[in-house]
Image 1 (spheres, rainbow, N blue to C red):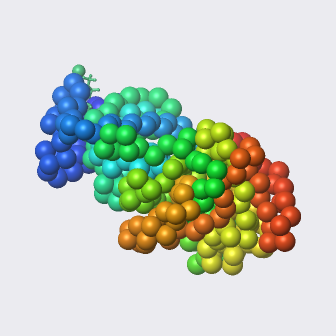
Image 2: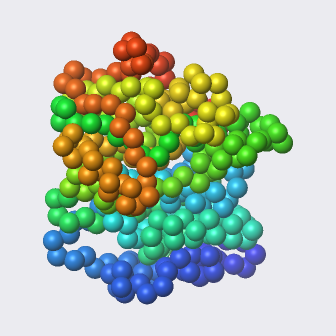
Image 3: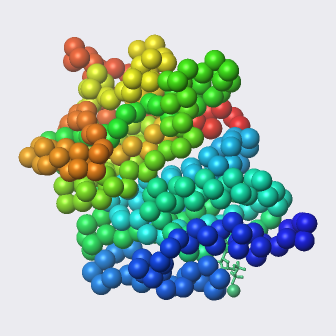
Length: 332
Ligand code: ADP
Ligand code: MG
């Protein structure tokens, strides 16, 4: 790295503070500074790991605020832990940087630190190299053995739920790409914030253990992601589009049909979609309320494969896009 600063200075300055306080209480025996991290796991628990790589110009626009890049890179990984019902513990960061830009690094580390606090994750190691901007984060969490939520457990008759509201992040991205930010209303800003700062639903995932039969996080879009549950469970699903939860901000910012299509096909909300046996539905709603997370029943698991969208009159509604590949479509 240039200006007499090497990667060890970068690690010490920006990333060592993300180890967080009292690492021993979290089972962190050795973290940043040794050849590898040593992490304690209680007997009877299983490790849940996931890794996601974000490449500048592919997964986010190069000019996205580095604070948001920091927040987002960890949030999308935390969301995978949420979908598995895992308690979040640690993460590692493999960072490839084109240059040693102190302002960029400080902003990136600040966003990452906020996201780490919000998602209750501690940094335990990583790698720092020079090259095109790429952020690869691996997260680790745990569940009591056998309790992880998967995509493959949905059964015919189960109810389909989603958390929060859908379509906001896709609406926010559309507004950003329209690039008329000078006229953004408060509602527009709300949607853009959901794209920039997704929040992994880790608390909801944890309370769904033992109740949900299947779960997934909505990253590619409801139809695409519920489609994964259906396929991997060997079932199908029907959803009532009128019941899909839309935020007031989304309704205020787009015509009704566009808002609904964003909610059904748009990605990046990082809400959870999960299935629950009907007898457990009220327990699921109560547990979600206990962690301040609204959840809405939007449909039911059926035996016929595929995901069908119905309107209030019982007619099938077709959507051209089965999954919203945000940066893929924009050709960044
Ligand atoms: P090694 O050569 O033994 O792989 P490195 O020189 O890559 O070690 O890293 C030194 C220490 O700093 C290691 O403990 C590593 O986990 C940590 N580290 C390197 N880069 C990062 C980073 N971006 N964030 C957090 N820790 C890092
Ligand atoms: Mg070494």
